[in-house]
Image (cartoon, rainbow, N blue to C red; front, side):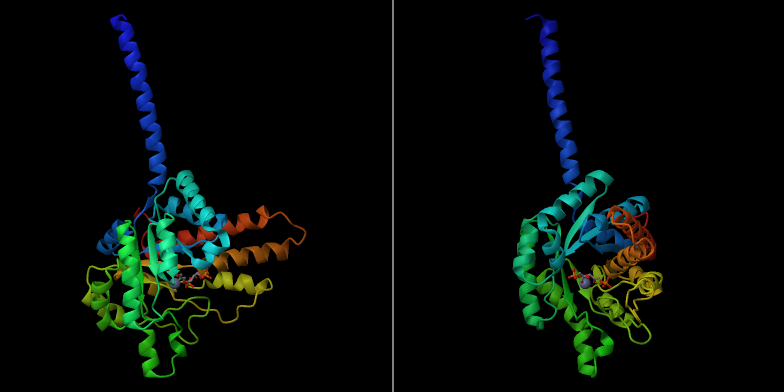
Length: 339
Ligand code: G3H
Ligand code: 13P
Ligand code: ZN
């Protein structure tokens, strides 16, 4: 073979190898869109903002959130509850998230919200999640330590991070005695020991929020003194705020005007969320506000256009409403522009 032919043959093989590597790279980068929250929390702590953790159940919700995050250049945690996982099925969720990563070109922390026991946490670790929450906060302290440590040991061996919880996400106003109130709010004296013994990577603390659309009967109140106390004990440690929806009154009104029944729905004022985000709260959980935006939009569409039966004509506007709510939230949390 002449020298020139030899060169051309080598060039051909080299090109094939480069093409394979490049292709592989494209594929790997898409997969690499699933990230851990470790780096996100480190930056959030240093720069004093919180990352939004949004609950998802279907394609439109994922699309609304990821489009908002892309436009606002924000970091993102997408979280699935056990109920969401049962509703949509694990395999659909994984593919929907992967599709969003490839379509929108963002990084996503894929997180299990409120994993009740070791089994569900293990299933999510094995199934490709990058973060899991083990919520044994209803159990006595020692039992919470035991379950959280079991999950953390397993998750860490697979490179997955773990969120745990101390205190109870229950309406504080329902407490009738001082001891009941103490059982609901986080006990700062337990925090250091809990983290040391379980090795969990972040901790949700109960400071007066609760899940759903009815968070306060009277004036909203969060126990910022507890948060300060916890911060003093674990200064460089990422804390999490659950039940952090503001129950946006515009959407409550639309729901109620179009056949809904949500009298007196009330959430956490946005100034309180921003204040917590500037402290050591690095992750803020939001579900109710997305549900309200979606439901209000669909109710209005049904009411105003009763002859419409094309799902795209009510799911499309609902997706857009979710996008606008998320964009707004990212500014409240201070994480817009921090991706
Ligand atoms: O914290 C709970 C989230 O809002 C998820 O609720 O269990 O009804 O999906 P879910
Ligand atoms: P909200 O009900 O306030 O949206 O809280 C959601 C949550 O904490 C999910 O874990
Ligand atoms: Zn929660």
